[in-house]
Image (tube, rainbow, N blue to C red):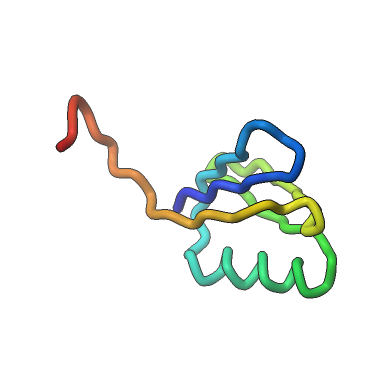
Length: 73
C-alpha cells in the first residue's frame, strides 16, 4: 500500500510503501489527528516513519503498484 503524506511548510511529499491496509492507515491518521499525537507508519523494509499530526497537510492512501514495465495507457 502506498501512502503519500504532505507536510506543512515542506516542499516535497513523503511517500511510504507499507504492508498495512488502507483501513489501518486511515484509523492511525484519524486517531493521531484527534489526539494531537504522531502518525507512525512502518514501511515494507521495516523502517519507521513518524509525522506529527499537527503538521499534516494531507494523506493520500493508494494501492500498491504492481511492477509495471514500459508505457501504460
